Image (cartoon, rainbow, N blue to C red; front, side, top):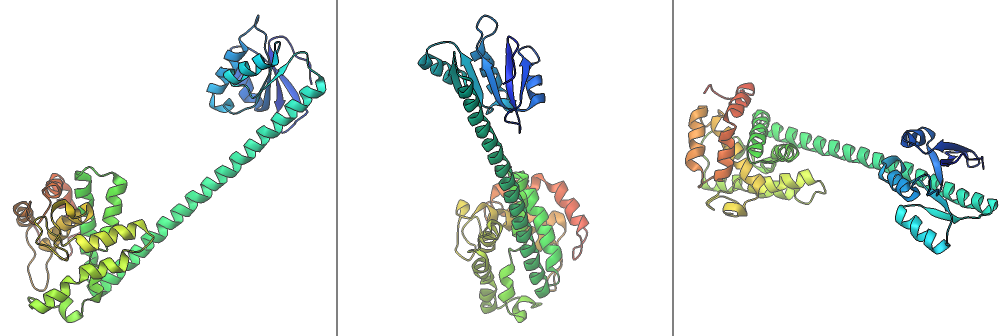
Length: 340
């Protein structure tokens, strides 16, 4: 070991188990230690010059040295020194007088410990990066699945694309008005694009019929909610499970008169209540072969009139609180609509 000046730290340098350096104890101690990047800090207790336990505690409070092994060399009874070291945060303690071979062995073990910790940290970082990459890839696959399911819906109904886009935009407005986070709002909006995926199973002569549906045809049309749910509900994807919830419940009504299960009030999942407002609003303002598009203000009045009956009053209030955003969205995605 290299010779030490009084009131100094001896460092075993990173990657060089036999190399040492001396750093004076002073106001620039942390900076000096950071520059050396040691594997082990060897500190001799010199009560007349500085408080060694306090110095160790200072080192432990610094993130860079919170886990760096510290070997405390001090005079005293071994049991007392061990307690002192443990209380101060030292990794090991060596009582004076000591044998040079013992000191070398202690430092060697601490270097191995430091290097093992460093390798463990590198492996943990690599695992976290791999996990983050896998999560991002999984999220991208989920969105790709949803995009392709949206395309499937558009193949059955060429007006579905603009409708789904506007509904998703309205969903974000309602969700944010309810106080959901941006991430939660985005998830419900993306999942909402599959709210009518069950219509893939509705025969064309019903789905594309220009006039009113017969009672039998209407019963068949209503089955799309359950079909959509069964298509999505058992997916391992969280987004697809949200989509299944929406598919099943977006035709339920606040007063219990909806379908397919006649749920009432907060029995209806929040996602279904949000999408119900967005879906009906866009259906009203959209032109169809069997109806004219409603002006925006008329559709707004309908939502207000049905608040507490068809719709969750909180969702209607949230929707109206973002009215300017809704109007801007409709104007941007105006295909199939009429001016307000």
